[in-house]
Structures are given as structure tokens and as C-alpha cells.
Image (cartoon, rainbow, N blue to C red; front, side, top):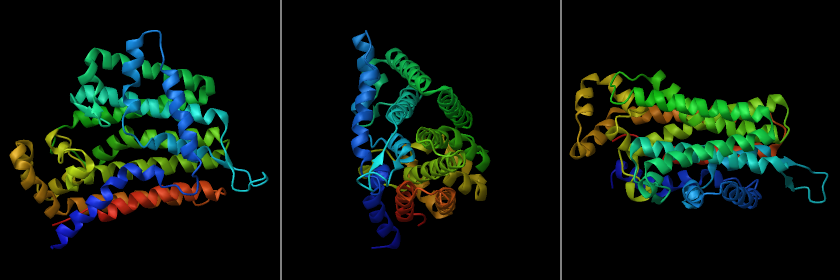
Length: 352
């Protein structure tokens, strides 16, 4: 077995862990119990007078999801009270559950709209809302989710409205930048970083900040946790982009090289084009039959190695950001998530 084949076997073992990142938090096992309440609250809050709207807006809640973002909210909101009878007991403020739901609903709203833009057929192991109910119903459901999110945030306080609103604006801007740069062989590293900072990192940063604020942490700790979320989000997107090129579709459930097919040139491709700009025309004219060769070319170019180094750097920054916090159960729980992401990254094939 060649080294590259061994790497592929490794990634088949570990790529599934990408979906389990947030569950790798042994220091806070109580989160799973809290998430049951979060899911129940989401379902109840989406009930409306129009049965069809309730059904469509709740559609993706029944799909497969590890609830990564609400887990981050709860992890950051957890407060350890050693003065209680059980010194290991963690408690959450009442509003943390609702805010965790708001963050997840914000993510789900973006999925409805993304699937419409991409004309996607599937999401979370289910038919996409646009495929099952039609585009008009999917748009309406996504908008309904946004209204519910603002209702939840408004009950918690104006500071939460501002934070969640800013995150969603950043998400839209990041997505708009990505759409603007589709099929552009001139897309730069800065263009890419600005886009993923908006479309992915901003919401993870907001999830951590919302949790920290709900947990009544000092302002300095809120900033530390927000920074952790931002850099975890940057690394998370980079690893996802690497797996789009490297991973086995049979394990991920996704078709390989979809970013290239859709003209979204991520960091491994950008780095390849910096070294081989003449390959840009081949990339732009690629058909399905060309994808295996392009994939091999990207791996040989070293672009994935550079992207992996950048992801590892952001994981390090994320962990360093929370080292000064006093609540060790919280920081250790978050650090374990970062370490699992690092493990996925380590086992992805990076060159041939």
C-alpha cells in the first residue's frame, strides 16, 4: 500500500468525525441533556397558524445534525459552581437554551437560502426544502425563521439582537463575496479569508460570544471566547474545503470536488494557481470527466499542504485565545473540540 493510499484509508476513518466535533466534549457531558430542551424549544417556537408553514420551516430540524453551533453556545454559557452539593455540577442560565436555539435557527435559515441558490437536492439526509416544497415555500420558511430568531433575541436583550444581526450580515456578505468570485482564477488568499470569515467564522464567533454573555462572563472572557469561535470557524471551513478535495464521498455523503464544479476556488486551489497560473483555463473548462485528474493535480501541487498549515495555525490561535480563562471545564471542553478538528486535519491526505 502506498503512502497516499494509507492516507486515504486514514481519512475514511476520521472524516466522519468532522460531524462529531462538538460531541467531543467529555468535560461537559450535561450538554447532551440540555440540547434535548433546545431541540424541543425550536420545534415549539416554529408552530404557526398555517400548518404548511410549520411543516416547511421545521423540515430540516428532523434531519441529521450534530447541533454544532448550539453546543458551542451551551459550552460557553456553562458555569461551574463548586459550592453546590455536587462540585462537578454545571448550570446554565435560563436564556442560554433559547439563545442556543436562535443560533441554530440562524444557521438553518441560511441553509434554506443556500439550497435555493445552489438548486440543491439534498440537505441533512433529507430532500432539500426547495426540492420537496418548492422554491417559494422554502424562501418563506427561511424568512419565517429569521423573524423567529429576532423574536428570541429581542426577549434576551438588545445586545443579543445586535450580535446576531451582525453575524447574519457577515454571513450574507461572505456568501456574496464567494458568489462574486465564482470561476475567477484571480481569486486571492485575502478574498478567500474575507469570505469564509463572514460565511462561516462569524456565526461560530457569535455562538461563543452569545453563550459567554448569557453565562455572565467578564467582558474580557467574552472577547476571548469570540476570538476562539472565529478562529475555530476559519479552521473548520479550511478543513471542510480540504475534505471536499481529499475525502471519500462514500464516507462523507457528499460528492467530491463540488467546490471546483461550482466555481468556488478554495485555498488549496488558490495556492495551486499561484504556482501554476496556466492551469486556470483547464480548471474553468473542466467537466465531470476531468475531476479525477484535477484532484490529483491539486494534491501534487502542494496546495492542500499549505491549506492544512493555515488551518493548523488557526486552531492554535483559537486554543491560545482561551488559555487565560479561569473556568477550566469550559476551556478544556472547547479545547477538546479544537483537538478533534486537528485530528481530522492531520489524517487528511495532503499530497501525492
